[in-house]
Length: 370
Ligand code: MUC
Ligand code: MG
Image (cartoon, rainbow, N blue to C red; front, side, top):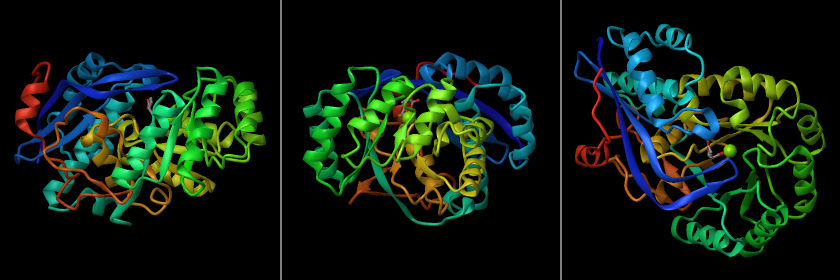
């Protein structure tokens, strides 16, 4: 089996409701659908979400790096030679979501060729994950209304609250309103996407100490080394590295130098192979992991649940899997449900996503075949 075709298809699907956070906002999902075809007729699929404010990638840059740099490496290669392919891809720096997409597509080919779900191939630890919903910036009452809706409709009992880069009091009040509306048993944690300084983040920790928050993600820029170390050293709750730990090396540095005490793992940027290494690192160091959301589509969220549910260490905490529900539509033909606060990992061969060709034709911006 040889790879004979690589397609990087840019598409855009509007959001029903835009998502706002400290480092940016998303009004439409301008993603890239990756398809890697083989001589056996098997096609590996992955969704790639460019996030310029996080990794510097854009929709055209993802298409370009795949067509010009990665496709020449992939076409002619055996998809089972994954380590060799990765070694060649990693000669190119950056482009984390493009590389992750390639990895997921190769695993999809592997699963489909064996007739086994990637969830089982990876480890198959549990069938489903508890879901955490990420609530974007809005007024306190709007954030409360959104959380209550997800609680009532989908049974979600864990919420990540977006904070940072707006008057600190607004965020603290929103967290307080959420705690009061949702009661003491719902889990709440916050993510500032580097929106504060380390000193401001310390103030937030103090102002929210009675709210029972469980994690504080990217409170400030990890480059504020000493301030951040001080924060990690003094915080009662784990400080989560998200965008500061988008590679294995970055994660190792942040965790071992006191820049973070927990890790967000996102298949959208580390695929399955690198995510498994991150998980091993976290487990070995004895720190907790949250399966994070890159504002993923249904296709991307499927990859996340497939991976998260495959291992014990990634299935302990609720995984951020619900924001695809804010898209006005999706390329996936396969449903992805959240019921009683949980999402089930697909058991069909491969990652478990079928693409709706009619929808792809409707939302694609162009057709490019390398
Ligand atoms: C998150 O956890 O930060 C927002 C930007 C991004 O890259 O991911 C999202 C969610
Ligand atoms: Mg984050």
